[in-house]
Image 1 (spheres, helix red, strand yellow):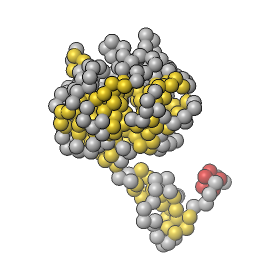
Image 2 (image 1 turned 180 degrees about the vertical axis):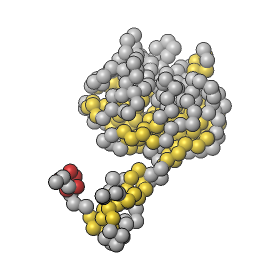
Image 3 (image 1 turned 120 degrees about the vertical axis):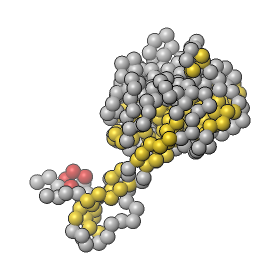
Image 4 (image 1 turned 180 degrees about the horizontal axis):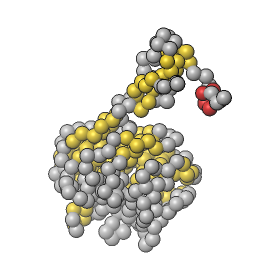
Amino acid sequence: MTTYKNIKGIEIKYLSADPPAPKAGQVWYNSTSKVVKGAINGLGAWASGGALNLGRDSAGGAGTQTAGLIFGGVDGPAYRNETEAYNGSSWTEVNNLNGTRSILAGFGLSTAALAAGGGEPVSNAVELWDGTSWTETTEINTARRYLAGAGRQTTGIIFGGNTTAVSALAESWNGSAWTEVGDLNTARQSLSGTGNSNSNALAVGGTVSPKQQTELWDGSSWTEVNDLNNGRGEMGASSVSSTDAMVMGGAPNIRHTEIWNGTGWTEVANLANKHDAGTGFGNSTSLALITGSNAAPRDVTEEWTLTDSTTKTFDTD
């Protein structure tokens, strides 16, 4: 007979009371109530946030749910350089990018962000945000658009995109220079990136056809891991690391949200609105945000909140 120990390699703990703060995935036997219990991912929900001053799509983003930054993007036919900062309830216009561009990579914090590549035309430009203004810095080696990135202002990575064709190229950033590193296993554009450094990142989804592939970067190479449940590109993304990430929205007209726990993707509550080519950011799967869309309403913002875990009693019949 298959047992929990056969599957997991450990026995279920016998406890007289439920643990005070169980982590998702933890299982135990409550000897007082004589039932098997476990902690599962908490319930999450999307709620309305403050509207953008300039409705747009395909912008770069950085920061957290309560301290976010959106920059560039496209408004109809017009490529933009506007930057807006979010304080958890409303957006404020701040200093613009030096150049207008869209479909770019952005990562970092609201006080220390990086914008790389984009178009139109295809660009190799890079700008750094210091909390007040943008400054041009070292260009990426290969100009591209529809790319993704992950990391912080002094340690990051960009990958994928489109040069004159769909690309698998990746470049690592050390705060002053870009270095070409190992290619993605699957070339793609309009993908999403999550992670907190140039040695900790995920490349998720993408196009030209909707893709489910997820790849993990460990600082030296990309490894294919478990796929998204819903193949798509042009998603928003939020993460604190490559083991705690989420993606939301995407094309075509997708409202799905999925959470990554380091092993696999789990579907959670859908967005209220379509966010094709929306910009997502956040510092965990508990607190995230997505804003913008290429379909009306273009200025809408949604905020995600997830409880840490919920205790569930399992049926042992």
